[in-house]
Image (tube, rainbow, N blue to C red; front, side, top):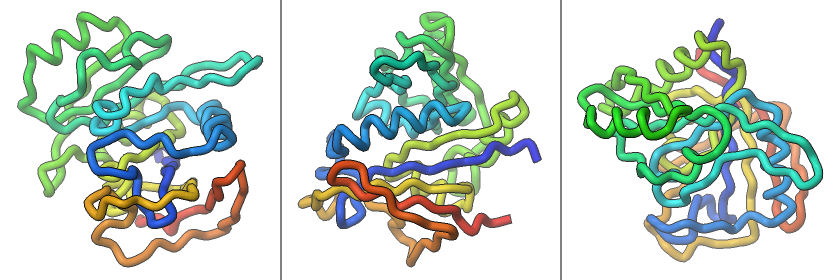
Length: 219
């Protein structure tokens, strides 16, 4: 198969939330986990995230390790309606960025993104039955381009969509010593009952506990 190996990495509070308050950036991972996250980026061909994380967190999505020579993997944004901020910091970084979007989006914005940023390409893929971007088609496109592995750094919407559609092969769940006070904060497995992982193990980085395992992927 040409479909990439998909890894889902999520930083969570103890009660499974992606952020302490809905719609805001919560950088609650420890320095040790932060360093480990950048080491992981070296292992995969592409790093992906949803447009909500781009617009709220505005990450550089690079690989930065003190004293070590690194490379920036391909950056991928899943953005059904092309809502991505045009001043996103990652557009100014070395390396390519692919934005997957649905049909019928603002063509002027698409042209601006591609003309203003030489390393940015906007790719249109079909929508699924839920009127959201077909992630399976996006991954298939990446596979045809020679991308063998993708690490998705969730956000609640994209992480739950990956799980709902059975697209993850491996998971890193970073459990931090925080509790979300906002009941509306997005949470892992929203609307789902449970998640089972095979060959799972725990690793400790500072105060954070990493649960690592493989999914029983739908075929």
